[in-house]
Length: 450
Ligand SMILES: Cc1cc2nc3c(=O)[nH]c(=O)nc-3n(C[C@H](O)[C@H](O)[C@H](O)COP(=O)(O)OP(=O)(O)OC[C@H]3O[C@@H](n4cnc5c(N)ncnc54)[C@H](O)[C@@H]3O)c2cc1C
Image 1 (cartoon, helix red, strand yellow):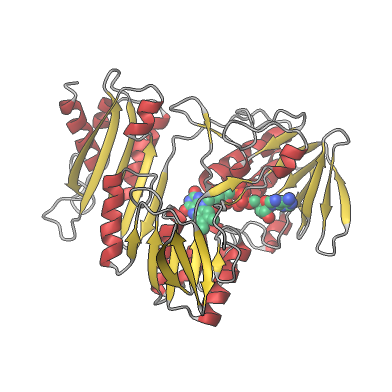
Image 2: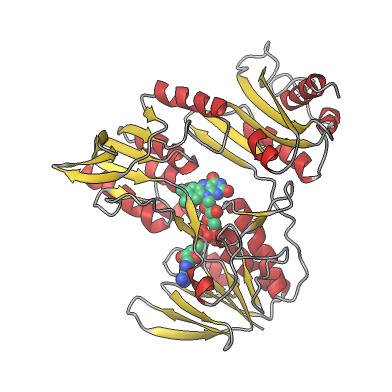
């Protein structure tokens, strides 16, 4: 069986490796438009900030390890069209010479690209996006060559936030401009405000509720405007306005897209075209709480979906069980994490949500080093079902693992009361007899008279 994979990042590599595991006789070819197979683009902000000195260490696996898998790796091959009748794709190399690659099964793992807001000036020198290895290398080279004193970040999702810390680490004066009412718009405003306070305490200027309409080069610097108003001047701009699925190849081949704009897939990661699968940031994702397909481009999902697509392309019968929307972010010494649905999202999906907020120490206060964490816990008032949580606290306070406890409960469709009954570990330096997530659950039950 000839299995062809377009894309060699999290989804494409997971798919290829799974195919070879499942059917060692299969012939697997991976076509990749750049020269960076299997790199952790999630690590790019840390390469920019200098915590990771050498970009090569961002590779999940070395080229030698990849070669051992028996997969054929075709680097610098940009696929330009999929012909699903003839069952072949055409790819062009750097010299613009085209080659046809036939397949029995095709896996599309073309990922996403940075969203490009319609702001004139986004193409000016000194304005960057952060998505591919090439972006990260270009940003670091620019910072080392021109040593900008000031940076403007447009957008404060997790990439904008991580990059704010990275640029600060390089001694650059950073300004963040966010269109929404608070930073990190994927968490509630009260959590965003805690992040904003911390950023300001670190000397970062933060402006929210501002929509940038123009970037101009004026003299030796770049100026950003909102309408007529000058918002910031700097020598470096990062536009971090989200990601959009790379679906042009699929759309041109009449492979249906879903409502989200990403490739329509089912739980087997099959598209609606015969013998073609899709996985990762180019594909839609089933949300277990809403039962609907959504778009949430994350590495953790890309790995899982890729594995399922690979197994099924190799004649397996695996199903992708869906996500619950779990995400975490570390910025300076704070960690913010969320899972499930926020109150506003739960309401929009027909639930009857109640959210309680509380503060609790991460471990017994008498043991040195205890720090306070803020928890927001959401459940359904009618059924008692657990719907989601947001937590913010200090790095080292196990915030992401606490959100993972709740994510596991959400995955299993448990109630808030079940969370109170969980058998969680306790020792004074690490937690309390009732872990903070259980205290929050108990508070929710009292509040709702459950
Ligand atoms: C800065 C940053 C930080 C992140 N941090 C996190 C994090 O902390 N946690 C998390 O879960 N996720 C994080 N993510 C998201 C995560 O990296 C992505 O969800 C993940 O990489 C998606 O994998 P993918 O294989 O679907 O797509 P991509 O990584 O986008 O890879 C797509 C692949 O397709 C190839 N390709 C595209 N078009 C073609 C074509 N026409 N022909 C040939 N090849 C093609 C590309 O070269 C690439 O190899 C981060 C992303 C960024 C940019």
